[in-house]
Image (cartoon, rainbow, N blue to C red; front, side, top):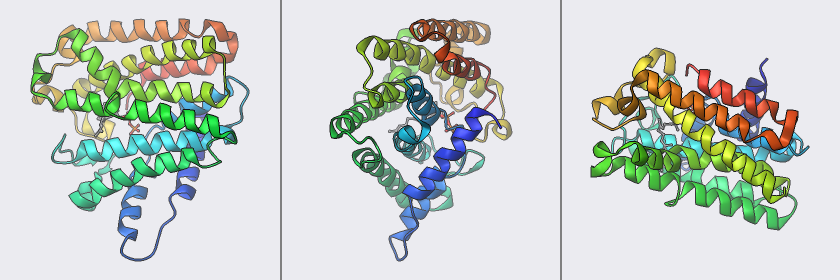
Length: 291
Ligand code: GRG
C-alpha cells in the first residue's frame, strides 16, 4: 500500500469519528457532510499536513486532527463550488455531487457545517496540547480559507474580469483559490512542531511552488482527460471562456512551467536534507498525477 493511500485511510477513519451520525431531523445535514468527507479523494492536503509534521519528528497521531480539519475545509469548498450558483457540476470524485444527491439547501448547509466543524476540531485538544499552538492553527487556517485566501480566489474566479486575466492574474487567482490551502497544509506541520522561522519559510516556498504546479496540472487534466478518468466534469473552464494556464501557454508550455515549479519546490527543501525526500516525491506525484 502506498504511503499516500495509508495516510488517506487514517484521515478517513478520523473524519468518520469526528463526524458521527445523529438521529432526528438534523441528521440529514450530518449525512450530507459525511457523504462529502468520506467519499474518497486523494487526501493530498492532509498528507502534506502529516508529512510536514513528520519532518520535525512528530507522529501521524499528533497531526491527524489538523489534517482532518484541512480536509473538512477542502470538502466544504468542493460542495459549494459544485452548486448551481457556482460551477454547477453534477459529478465529484466519481459520485453525484452533494446538491444532486441531497438538494441545494442541504448542500449549502453541509458546506457550512464542515467549514465550522474544522475550526471546532482545531480548537479542541486533539489539535495540539498547547492552546497557543491551537490559536495559531485556527488563525492560519482562517486566513488561508477566507477572503484573503480561498474565498477571495473563488470571488476572482467568478468575477466579470475573469476571462481577460493574463498570466500574472491567473497566477494570483490560483495562488489564492488553490494555493493558500496547500501552503497552510505544509505550514501546519511547522506550526505543530513550533519550528524555527527558517524551516517555516522553506516549507512556505516549497508549498507555494507546489500549489501552482498542482493547479497547472489540474488545467492540463481538465483539457486532456475524461470525466470517467477524473471523476468530475472536464473542459468546463475552456467552455466557459475562462483564461487558464493551458490557454495562455499551450499544453507543452504549461507542462514545462509545472516541471520547473516542481524542481523549484524540491530545491526549497535543501535545508532539510534527506529528511524531506517524501515531500520531494510528493511534488513529483503532483506533476505525474492522472486524477
Ligand atoms: C466555494 C469558497 C469556495 C471555494 C471553492 C478550491 C475551490 C474553491 C474549488 C474547487 C474547484 C476546483 C476544481 C479547483 C481546482 C483545483 C482543485 C482544488 C481541485 C480539487 O482538488 P483535488 O484534486 O481533489 O485535491 P480531491 O477530490 O482529490 O480531494
